[in-house]
Length: 201
Length: 236
Image 1: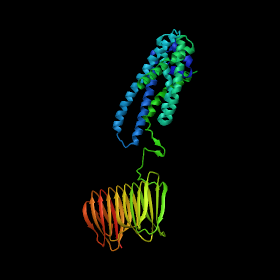
Image 2: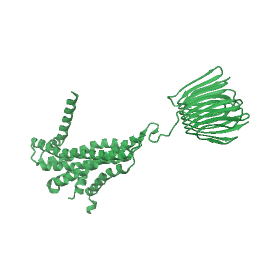
Image 3: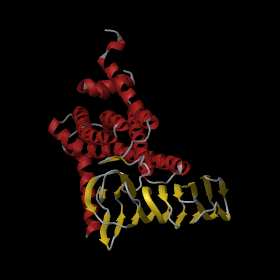
Image 4: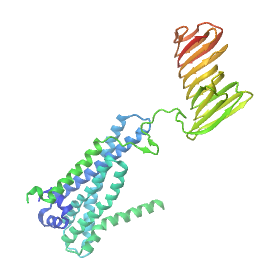
């Protein structure tokens, strides 16, 4: 099964494709490739959109320093993409690890590498947000609104794919797999709330 | 079914195309134009305050006006002759944010304005002496007797009669005058970093320093600093 079929399959035949990935069609290299491909596309696209917005804002002022904007723009784009990729790779590994241990706690019997692999393939769901990024290039405000809407769709599709994968690899019910799939997101949310509370105290 | 017709292959290609487009499009598209209510701010034209008519803020007619004293900042001033009119009509237009004060004191019509458009209609039969100071704006006048006109950072187009004496003082401006005076006009011109170009009864261009240009019983003191003044002189 070619990686292009895997990507398309995860969008049109998700259950069939996830099962196939867990039974030999998938690989860690393929999984990491999907993460890097979609993550890079998303963060580069967002960085370029922000740069265009800054350029538009500078046009409102009488500042005319295209050289500085280009130089600073390239550095900021590089940093933005690097941080975005690092964020996604951490999510890729830690998300898989946390989901695996939660699935284990819920009587799962799968392997860690399979959960991490499936987690990586779920990055395919970023394609929805990328549609928003394309719209953003044509109409910024509409693109931002559509991207925010598609962020929800992206998350739902990611959870859906991950749930199928955990249920299949660990042999647990869909409910338990769903809990494991969202466990990393819940943990991040709790950590975030905790940090904000600590700062506000 | 051919391999290329497999739906997952087609969707896979589409997903990759979307990823590619999401990178290419923001890179090649021009920066968006930020728009606020009232249109884009990106290409603001240079507008003298009050150069757009806006709504009528003030309108009044005055009789017995012997002289006009006007001070305007960031405004457009239009003084025009109106054939058949016997009164002086003052109209002020603006789009908000402007200030004005119009008063008549012992024959002198006093107009103070900022950020507005001032229109003054004069009776066509008799020119009225004008004393005007316009800063950051534009003065367009006809049917007046030249008293003193001061332009700062402005533009002017003035057609005036000279009776004995008058003064034109302009800095950082660009203006053209058409002056007429019975028996001729003598200009006492001073120019610094600018030019006073005289045409009509005689032709002369003063780029720097001082010069007396022309002769006649009527004298106009001209001072141009960083300014180009074009003056057409005609004796009657």
